[in-house]
Image (cartoon, rainbow over all chains, first blue to last red; front, side, top):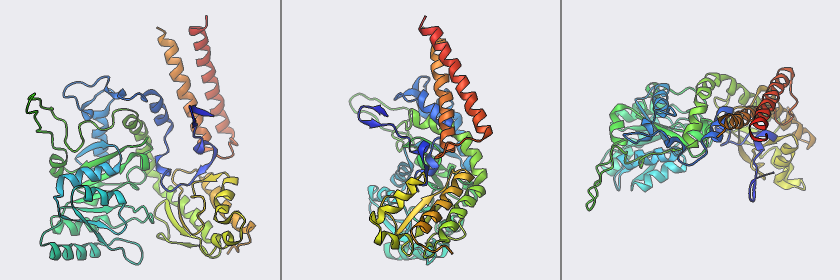
Length: 392
Length: 60
């Protein structure tokens, strides 16, 4: 079935259980699908844009209220919606980082954090992870001290991922923020894998900025996300333009420089808004989500030779697994080689494991029903058994 | 202008979105339990009502 010339309709989510590590939290709610139908036209939210002509002031649809609701929900002072988490990193780095500044990131930071620092002219420097793949407050303190010694100045910014994309481990952000604040370093918390799927409280974390991803964790169309800030920093990162045309004398009202004016002008913001009541509720069911993740992980660990590389017991739905001692041994002999696993999973109605992966790979069970997650676990065991692997 | 027809188009699409969501939560089997079958039946009935409105409004 086509949805346009040469474009197949996408029915992955209707036909399969999808455990793709990056897609789970961004699946739309039914209300977001309806919003996409209604607000698909380009500048669709601008019908009722009135002075002062800025997205976060629009009353109908209730975008202004949505901004206030997001800030309250995260326990932060100000929020802007943005086209993806990376644009949040970019806005903050562009505001605080000068050419040649050392900026602290971590050994588990997403690549877009590096690029945001690079674009601002800064030098990204990583806090190393420990043997358990955690970023600790002690390691943060040590890195800050090292950087101050080497650069003879304090880094203007520290990025830390609440939950990292590699292992799905939950890090001691509050402890790291406490350390950074002892050096007066503001902290940006990357909540791409937490905001929208698990409870996040900015005040409890002590965050100066929180960045969330709409399409990764808030059941919203891409590209979407949010940048939240405390009052102290909101004035800086959300500063308004002072530009003036030297020929025309034009000025540009209260457009915000780092936001490049308005950000999400159609289906993205309304999709986020439509999902928000559901998102606000679903984070309260986080423990149940983690239980599903644990059950699938345990099923995989029952296959002899399999190891979990993420924290165990699981504290998140994103999990990194090592099947070099199990499924990869099958792949060595199988006529489909490494593709046998994704192929067998498809036969069971499961997708999302990168075709060819039988060594180290990730999966995400977020949003699956109990029945679906049970089927995923049982399917891994069934495939293992049918291919001669021992079940412990 | 037929506001009634336009509303019926949106309403039908929205109900079908609910049905689509049901297909997602029951993938890959779509083997609906009793409650899910009741919901599916209600959606289908509502969509038929919207189609009837469209026929009344647009095909006279």
